Image (cartoon, helix red, strand yellow):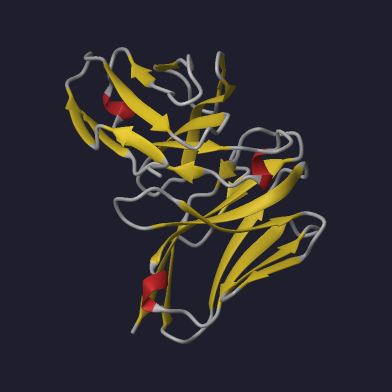
Length: 112
Length: 117
């Protein structure tokens, strides 16, 4: 039972354009949502998060949107840069949970 | 600050062999985790620990064991290696202020790539 799902294994965009990565979840008890970025041969690194009391959180070029009724979140990167090319994982946790559940990841390629 | 350190970086095991993947962190984090990542798959939680002396099973614990005798170290033991355990293993740590994993980002090590043949 995949509780966090990223339906697009890959995404390719041009430098300077917007990248939109999507994530769906099924567990209505999830209250915190995070995005991680992973380069080859490295561990994932934290990018941005959002709690369920918000519908948007922004950090520089990165914005995460949360639609609780649709159980959907998305990560927007504007403008996209070649250095953003990586695998992006979405993850979720419940309020009283001590563990994160990860999606399968989306490989983003930003072409110069 | 070293963060989360995993050793070894690579290992090849024969079926039935055993080994311990080492993980240590120097951030005084109370929570530690072991994940595995298979190609095209997300990170699956194997075991986690919320403090020294306390461990709990994740989604895919079969074939693994852990211990947490100190805050810093969280080794993962494979007793009888099987080809299905071929994967990349990541250790992570965090310091949730109120016990909620989601509001304290995980810090990951760089992984151990394990092949069982």
